Image (cartoon, rainbow, N blue to C red):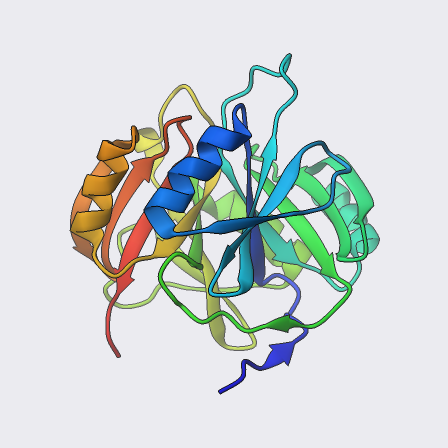
Length: 257
């Protein structure tokens, strides 16, 4: 069976990337955890590789310059049909554009921005059609914005990307699922004071795994940390962890049906 290739609806999470201090060590960690292999990617912003799972790219890893002592975090990219137009909308709605828009070789056009609360995200204008997500282990399956209070920032994302928000039955308090064309694509989670004081709002990437408990065990064996132990949520059995450089992500075995 072949995968259908489609142009993603603007606003759909379509890529995730991570800037780190040691690219080689980070590749070793995620290769051991998810089985990722790596191929070279666009080099405009420095050393960059694409993580490949099951023959398809699933994430990007890049290396920070030695003088940049920044905390590391996964960045969610949202699809756009026109990155330059989206950049103007971001600015008009109170966000900021930090990088770009710029071309990423022949793959497309991208930018890095922040919403009015400071959460960093990317925008990706694909130059080619992309295979649909499979939900296979080691691939991103969900993206969630963690913020102190989501009402104001929801307006920003609705104006820029056209999301419709709903609170689904069984969701955690303060969670709004964002829809495009009637399909859930991501969520905003208001966590109040539970958001660490040493960092602002941020987008969280969820990766599919076959066994959450086993994955958490391997994270700690490989030098990572557990942030939120395994528990059952609306999207399935999940846990939140950090890699050895401190980048947080969630691993989830999705609920059946």
